[in-house]
Amino acid sequence: MSIVIKNEQDIEKMRVAGRLAAEVLDYITPFVKPGVTTEEIDRLCHEYMVNVQGTIPAPLNYAPDGGTPYPKSVCTSVGPVICHGIPNDKPLKNGEIVNIDVTVIKDGYHGDSSRMYYVGEVGEHARRLCRVTYECMWKGIEKVKPGARLGDIGYAIQQHAEKAGYSVVHEFCGHGIGQKFHEEPQVLHYGRPGTGVEIQAGMIFTIEPMINQGKRHLRMLADGWTVVTKDRSLSAQWEHTILVTDTGYEILTTSEGTPPKPVFK
Image 1: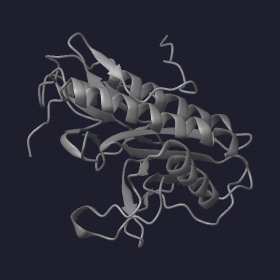
Image 2 (image 1 turned 60 degrees about the horizontal axis):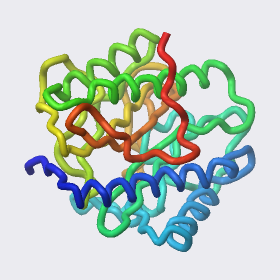
Image 3 (image 1 turned 180 degrees about the horizontal axis):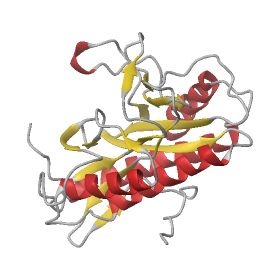
Image 4 (image 1 turned 180 degrees about the vertical axis):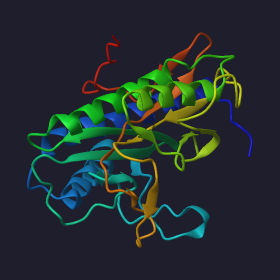
């Protein structure tokens, strides 16, 4: 499958879809607190997407390669869950961290973004992981420009994570996105500079590093979706959808509540 270079019409529709995805994350923020279930978070997000935005939740019944359809409208990955956590009836506890991953479809185009949330009072070890993971995403974003290589993104992310004492998940990666949920290219969060596909203006892809507090190894739970750290250490993830412009990049998944770019020392 070849990489789809987006035209102006595609890009305009992707801007709309990206902003709407970010606005779902804004909307759900005040609801993330001790005692709420991830099932309730899913219900609230679903109703906001369908009834307020007029968007379609892309994950609901998504079944790539004919596997088990994903049963919910968002992914909620708590604690040692790396990605694709299925919302359930277990209440969130004070001190936990959770990633909420939202993908909406608007006018046939996908907007995809995720953020980390603190549940109540969260310890510094978990806060640091979330903070460094956010920085990792940004280290990758800053490498995006025409003529650069995808390996430059992965290398920047891996260097920052490992310098902080963390590990990078290898099995899951960023991806091209547009009228399809997942397109080429695959955007690895590790790698060597100067390697991989050359980045071109008009590409749109996600950068979404999954960073573990312990080792990078993982296992899949019996539900066929939930991925957890093998050593049960905490994991964090942030995600933006990125447009490659003629001079660099534009983040498509921004809204009023989007956290600002970190200040690197």
